[in-house]
Amino acid sequence: MVRWGVGEKGVRMESSPPESGFRIEVARSPEVDGPPWHYRGRAHTPSTTYDVTATVNVDGTVRVDLGAEAPPRLVRSVASLVRSACASLEIDTTPAPPPHRIVRWHADR
Image 1 (cartoon, rainbow, N blue to C red):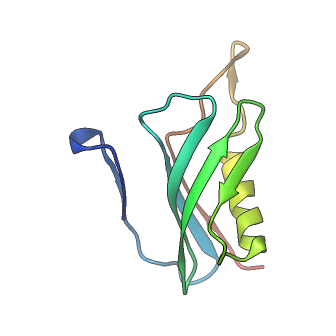
Image 2 (cartoon, rainbow, N blue to C red):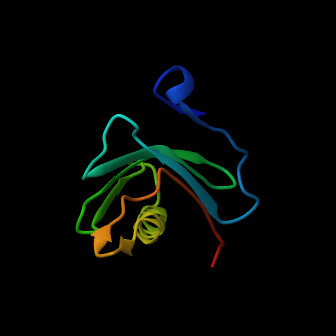
């Protein structure tokens, strides 16, 4: 379980591992409005769960860390999912902030 903040401001994320592929569940830090925006959470595979930290910059670049044990392919895939979830949305030419929470599943290929 990942918990940010205290009391009512905390965001809880709990889940079981996927049967195949991987799933990410990350939440943006409520203490930092960004940019850059900082996310923390988990990447779940059928056999392992990795702690995820991600930084999303205003230019759309994403830096992801899953620890030294994570396969490079998983790191690239998680970065790609975070990048696509945070793609800039423009409303009247004003960029919107990225989502507070990202939950995505990716199939095995």
